[in-house]
Image (tube, rainbow, N blue to C red; front, side):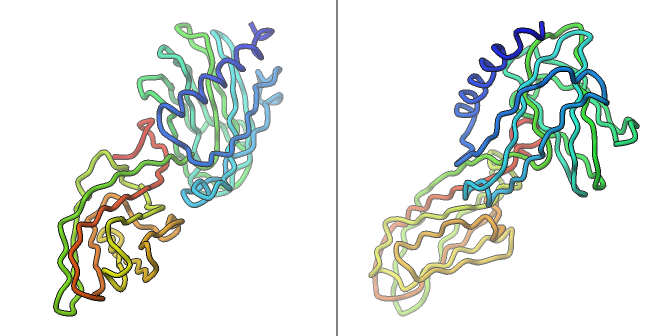
Length: 282
């Protein structure tokens, strides 16, 4: 079975890339593809992997480092992988393009002591990130085939991968008069379709002319932060490091410049890490 792995994994790689595109965008994704190398059936012959180095900001900028391994598993087969983790929360992310996929997974420390074990199956749909707080050092991931499944899997370790989403809406009509600023609000705090840890990367405002207002302030109530701009067209980019949560009530304040009436249209793009449920943390 191992003799035909390369061809199977080339097909899996293509299917995975298509699936990610259909699932959601990983904007500017920079992915290094790695293939399982036999023999890797014991801890002593474990294949070494590089951990991911990602964040919302690096994903947006296209500077993240993602290492995706493509492997095959069958009954009685064990695939071992070795990785060096820094201290802190680390993730083991698994997925497969096949509905019936199921296999056992275990995490060991460098002394060969089993720390965690679980069964991964495709009831999650999509990639699943299992998270553990670890100390610095080498660790081993073991994937074991079970009787009901023989097929392929995708594995990455380290930081989670980030995905992008967004939405837009027309705000209430604004009338500027009397020399005072005006504020309009919208509330996304109960939007369960927006991941709870999604951070805003871009805010784009239209239908507000340069002559209408002097400046615009975007306030994220959940993060207790505000971003102000006096530059037309009032858009802000590369905001992930500002830590503004998308799932929040938002206040947008327009600074007075002259009497004017307009109906703002706002678009927000955010990034979020894939979660234990295979899509996002609700």
